Length: 152
Length: 328
Image (cartoon, rainbow over the protein chains, first blue to last red):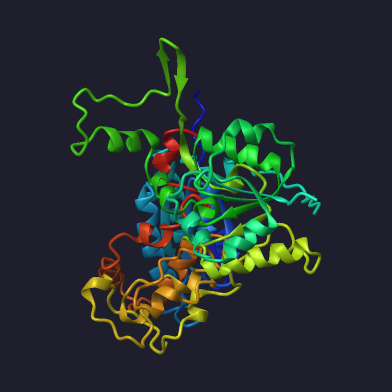
């Protein structure tokens, strides 16, 4: 196979800063790697680690978490909460055998479209270098359920 | 009229679930009065071929405890499903993997090496068990270990889920009472897929300890902390899993001064138990400085083990990446 590996990356952005940075990159026609699929949340503090685990379980090769710069959160300090959760989650994922480079936390303001695109490009290349993850825990087939028939 | 048939089976488990059933004391006589016990390897002699000879759906109620660790467990899970009208995943192992499910942190080859070929085992030739062996009388077989421990619901269609390691005896008694009432036409069965013998809330909800501070400056191990008997354990820096764990045990451990370790599994609506705990613990860490956050987290010596002690096989990720590398 000569095809290059195209990693699948799920990116979580916050409504007020990092998604605006992505918007700004779009308006300014800055290009970035198409490997990242952005999902907009109201705030990085809304990011339940379940979302990230679900991404990896369903075949993501890397996950990007973005939010407002420390001190800039629209909801005062929820990005700090995201930071604390991120540190803890990363420890758990590493214990589960994940390379720590597959998760990345990035702060961007609405004005930093250029930084946002550069960081995404860099992250995609880092994950590409690691190769496919194929955790794919969701691949365990779901058992079909049928209604119960009880005759007493 | 013959009595409805009852069965209980243990797969990869410790036997604690069976003891919990016997701990219902004289209520066990109600089981005997209302059911014909046809298959219960820990309590009576029966052969798999006797179960295989039964008509499909002829057993009314099967309590299945234990995870699916080898192909024998899987075979019997499918057999009991076929023969039973109501199949209950009984206890933490069958529900979510429990302690045997922690093996999903390691590939099965490593598990075999640890069990048979380390310094604690006298095995100079490094002999590992073979699943088939030719004897003069013919070939004999032992079960083959699966690459990963699976929960019952990952193998067959489960009707009800009864969590707990083991399920509390008063909960078991209540479920048996309910089934007997259904038999007498006095009650109806809950909808398929329901969690029975447990609450719909969290252990924290049942816990009497006081909560006031919302931050933790230091995590420590319970044996190293002289804990206040009235105050929330997590607030004292003792890793307690009550906030994501399903209620049903009357907060037994925190009431006795020990942290909740999560044996009743995820609370209602929790998709991934460990992830929910990461969210909760992350919220209460008392610093916004990355270096200080790391220092506080160093107090949690084994976060994956802390958050997935009972739930690894049933979690979204189902095990570590290494375990996956070993097989499907």
